[in-house]
Image 1 (tube, rainbow, N blue to C red):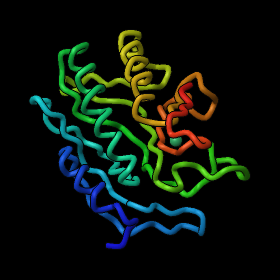
Image 2: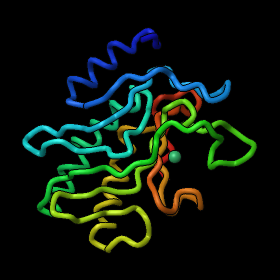
Image 3: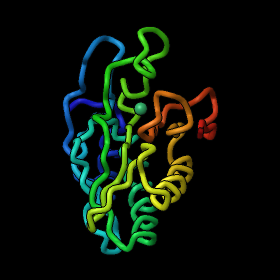
Length: 191
Ligand SMILES: [Zn+2]
């Protein structure tokens, strides 16, 4: 397994967080698309008895995105959903993570954070009691209010958070990524 120099340390931290994953050979769709620390995610674990949270799409992402994802889902999303709906978070419904394409699937322009494994699209969450929460407009009002809360909190872990209301490309899902904007690691795009 060849990866970026500090991949081993990232994998160790991911394992310590209870993330179930497999390392993968770096995808190479085209010259500009490359994931330096590729991991395919199976599930996340939340402490304090929430149990395991499945990622049925098995997204392929860079280890450095997987780490804040596990911290956000485990530390914020699962507890908030459990508090509001008296049921454990069971599933995070996502896209594939890695996709070799430009931003917003446009023919020209900048390469997407998805093309280097730094981004994941999340369409919603499913709870143990069968309740489904979707970022799309069809969700119920109580669910939408809670989703707004976890969306705002995501800005603590990710450098970009886009969703319904941001632009037409994000009307039915939350996009989170860890791409650095300019020279500051603290700069956020949270729309
Ligand atoms: Zn996206």
